[in-house]
Length: 277
Image (cartoon, rainbow, N blue to C red; front, top):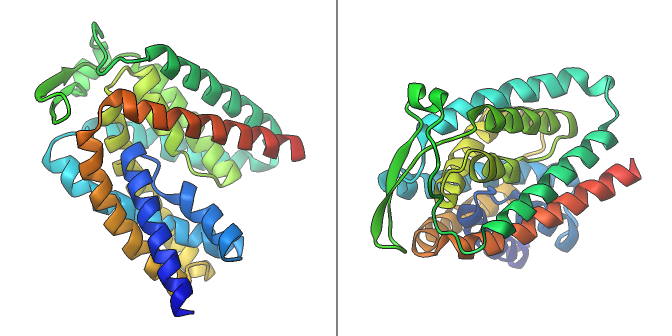
């Protein structure tokens, strides 16, 4: 048992690094690792995954907030769309065939992966107009990029499209019970034309808020098992702290190269689930 706990802890460190760098939480590594490598029940694995998302957000939030990479205004604005979407998804669960949603969102992810590929070596978006809504809400910002060694100012465009994508991500999360980290990054990077580093940092912040809100439900269900969740939380916290430092030293094109395969993987997972449904 001790050896297993140590192994879970080490895998959780990897999950924390990946989640912090890519803005995906950590569940994308934790859930399959627990179920496939350790034979953990899927419900208990998801419960541990929720804890890992909170730990990733907590571990990276300090560094990202201190260096003003996280855009709190954008995060809270888009969180409205995600929350309303999740409630909608819970209500329409009996009315819509989930497999169609799987296919729709898989295509959206593949389109976004293609859009990211087209960006190629672009480090920060250029010539981005400031959307009137973004100007009114003060969504634009700036941060110091340690990889480039300069302060980067950025505008936020296509607010309605980004809000719509986040609403859809909330719907599919509420309806299908899956995470939406890839959609959060996609909404900000591809649609709202924000720098990728700001998108991943803000995504980490948003997922922590969402996960904290749902953790109580999993706890009441008995899906959060301390012997599993404790090493996951500690490992992910360590990994996220390290990952937040690594991300700031990486160039955006490198992060994009890591993120694109993840989006394609999630898209094909959705197609598979839709096909099975």
